Image (cartoon, rainbow, N blue to C red):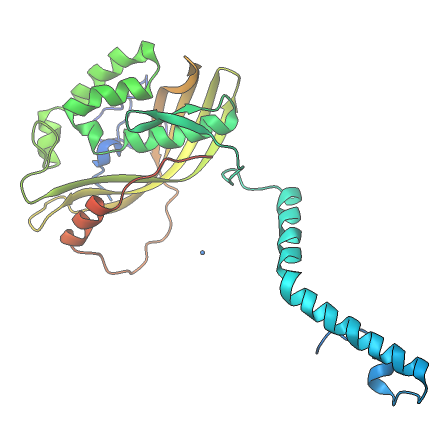
Length: 288
């Protein structure tokens, strides 16, 4: 994976073998849905002939029209949906359109696990691991070890535990307003929520895959006296995955900025609203 266009923070990149950069991990970025008559037939443009055969024909046409209208009102929607469905199947869907296949069988702690052994499963794994790698919990020493073991391949766990501990040392936590346990000061709420917007497989083999996850999220400390207010960010995380012990695990990862849309002029919520939202709204398990 190329590191040339990646931005860093603090000179660390715990998941990258080259250790060139370190960015939004742990939420510490400091920069930021006419009636159908067909042709005008005899029954509409001419006075019907005064014989029983013509009368029967007119009545028959009227009955057919009424039946057609009733059918359109009751079942027409189904026909339209069917056409759309067919178009969707043949036109080709976007890379993250749902397939209908259940990709996740269970959870390992709080992180989804049991991903399908295919490209779809690799994308699902990458999306869920990206969320965990940029969570508030990754900054907490008591929680970080479990997360690293759940996310990474076994032969990378020890190395990455050490590198994460070095990256999230006391000086770093002080800088973002957290104590030694990764907790915010009384009256403050530390926020680090990531939402994958889409995934893309750039390489795939039976035992390995490389997946890019385009993400947005909110990061910072909510509180009246916060010096690190909650803001949003857009970034793309690239995860190299390996199929091991019946599941997809991360071998290495890197991160770069964007793609980012134009910001709107929506009024920002106050600190209390942000803190309340974090407490009331739970997260998701992401699936391809």
